Length: 455
Image 1 (cartoon, rainbow, N blue to C red):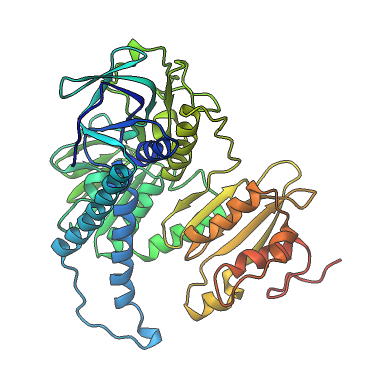
Image 2: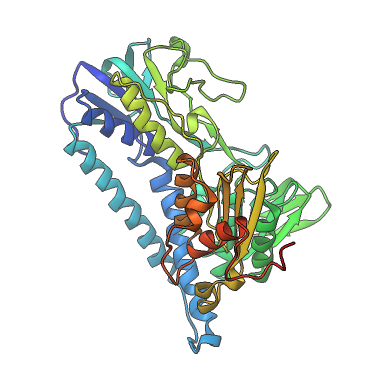
């Protein structure tokens, strides 16, 4: 990492170089602030190096491998397909390295001073850095993110690893047990199952139990087809090596145990006790709508301030915090933060699907030309709307759901109606037409699916 001379005092100090932090630093520099960013490990943080980007890279590889072996009906026959785990790992690492280098280039090009190390607040205006230097600041942004939550009795080490390590393997284990039932467990479990791994998921209630069960039923059915075994309604009691004992009395043998039970805010060693920054009952930094903490000189963004723990939320907050630090009247007032599960099929949600006065229209992919052509009919689109026909929420279960949900987020932010979506020309043949079709259904004028005669 290229370093320059450290100024004794800066307009803005950013603690943490993940997606929230480096975006904040760049935006602040664009606004004319003198900015120093402190990052203890890798620029881009967990998302770029250990989570979002690596997981989607490996999911893509797993999908390619699986489809290569299961496309006989389309006339494709590939015998003895294999995966080189070392090359797969090298590709995954090269992607992160390329993006990390890109972040370093952007920071330098925008005049941001980058320092490798840790930073501790010794007051509301001063940071103590690892290299022994103290850094005075007018404003500071905490962007330290989160870390994998630990499970008592299943401390990380040997056969027990966290989700980051599961995405760093340079080998493909024969079997894997995943403790946890959130989207991380589903994504990791599905990708490794497609690589031929025997996968067990241990779920306290059930996988993705907080999501719309119409969508999750399709995901669970696909996981079952892939051989993923979900141990629902149970918890691990202990383990010997990689053998788990569940509270149901069942034992699960696996080569690797992945603990993926959630994330905890990272505030360790920040010296927040030397400031007026306040934490909530779960240890997250408390902020207002302008992302200011209780300490007027310090702001915070991303995972460290609480749910939803999503990179795109942190990116938006990084921009807002930088503008606030520069004296602009910005606020984090977005109406919706879209969420995507990169499962099979993908599930993407923006807004709400329920509530008083909310109606929902649904269009199945079984009636969509693109889905029929690509044999991907396992999905649907739901559009939720109120009595004024304003779009209040959208759920997409489909390939490319990750891209299509942006239309829904924009519609909600702009106060669009279902008629706005229905009357907007969507390209054909695409999955995006399913959003338009669902909007047509909401208006009582469906074209490509017969819902029965209207009364």
